[in-house]
Length: 218
Image (cartoon, rainbow, N blue to C red; front, side, top):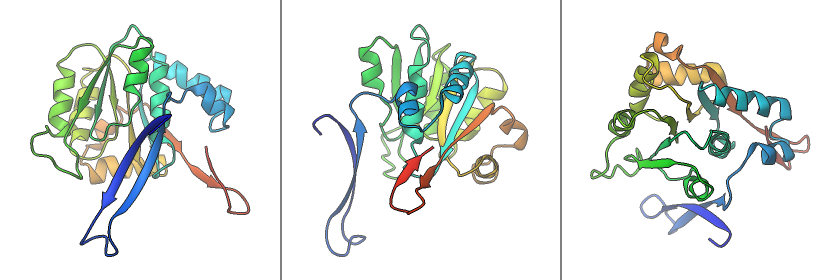
């Protein structure tokens, strides 16, 4: 797509009764940054500064929200705040993070792709095995595109034993901190004692205008 990248989802028969149907999600050619989010009023300058402080302090962050709330875009902006001298390992089942753009400006990034829970390509490794491989690569910041299933157990196991000395961040579906706790503990099977390894949950929300005609991300 000229001027950017796009993710395309397609359905056909028997799901699509009337023929092929497509959904296209376009991504920015250049990654989102905290100043761009401040300009668009998704976040204020104090909160952006706090996030930068936590990223520099190698905390554990989960960015939660509903579909199309800006989770992946904000995660990409968090990656820009990592010191370029620190190696970054990304793990995704659907490639969306701005890895190429960050490499072009000098970031050291190793990108890994795991098996999608949707397509289930058997030649690809499941996310939990890919995550364990990432942990063997040494001291690195770890960015998980989305915490979906069994990889959550391996991720929290590593976080609890202190195997990760740098930033750990990822996205997850959830509308509130309690909703994230419920999903991680009850749906994904992470023990409540392990969930305490989460330092911060940030919620990205889609808010409608009073006339219900526009949607804003906050």
